[in-house]
Image (cartoon, rainbow, N blue to C red; front, side):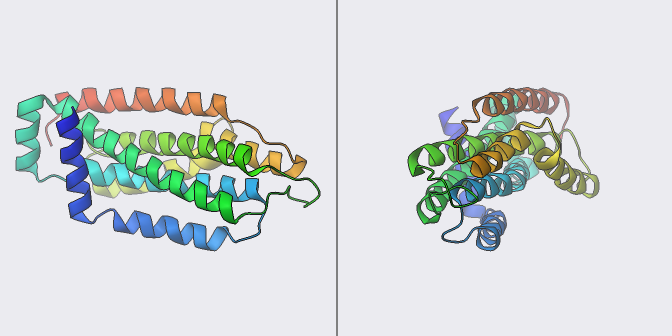
Length: 223
């Protein structure tokens, strides 16, 4: 599995297809996060913005290989394992991107509540932001896994479905990502730091199920 992960990571790095989602995420942060803003609000925004980027990275990793190369890898290690490696590389990439953003946002934001009346310590706030970011990276991976091949084959249907699902995952009540982000925003109003452990666990469970479904379907469908 280690060799597969290195192979998929090398494909992603050399393709340079990661640049558009990275630039999009940087643009989101540049617009929505500014120095001196309340820390929990900024961390919530950074986490929410990562979700569609994570879904996009899944689509890139899954579709990165030429058909002939994918067939060779699938024949050597099995289609399910090959697909799993692509999904894991996408998740790791989005999680790393989110972690870097979380550190930067934690450093430049004001350690205060939304009304500036209560001090919010940076380290606990950064830890809460990191958990929310991981929850969004996980749920974005689940969205990507269920809106690209082998679940959806047509690009014309897959891309709009991915964008809509990513939006709903951020705003719909009951979504782990929405719970994690809204917890940070609510905490900013009261000056308390929530730890979104339950949303993170729920996102991990949903992602595991989505990944399993995608890998099983990969074993049954040809590109």
